[in-house]
Image 1 (tube, helix red, strand yellow):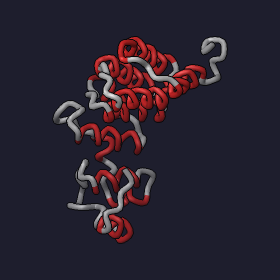
Image 2 (cartoon, one colour; image 1 turned 60 degrees about the horizontal axis):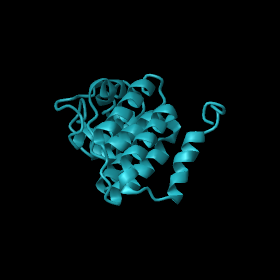
Image 3 (tube, one colour; image 1 turned 90 degrees about the vertical axis):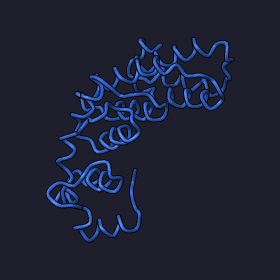
Length: 192
């Protein structure tokens, strides 16, 4: 059906339909593989796929993290250069959620994106030790300046400072130099 109706989210609908069923533990390995194949075939199904994986992990089923990584990494590698943030964000979120390393070409592709949500997810993954040690993000580090707080990357500039994921450049604390953002920081306001 998915190949007959490529503009419809057939696989996403099918994976969502699993909400009405309970998979027996003896069948989990097969179902997990099929659900993950749906994500590779139709990345728009990732929110439903992640929902199923989380549901069964919470129920005590064992996730095959290698299988998950073998799905999340290629999606990041393929869709990051295309600027398709939704697919990349879901893959990054899945990696964080299930404690799966983001390495190799996938983290390299992600680090080239100019998307604050992607940057914050990648920085969160790094803070949790899910990326190679010593990894720096020069593109995103460049936004750690006071003037960027009023620019396109204000969210990244503020959040990465408040969470201490990236240091300020040029001044010790660029967020504290701006009265409005200083107020937010002093009151513990952050968005991630």
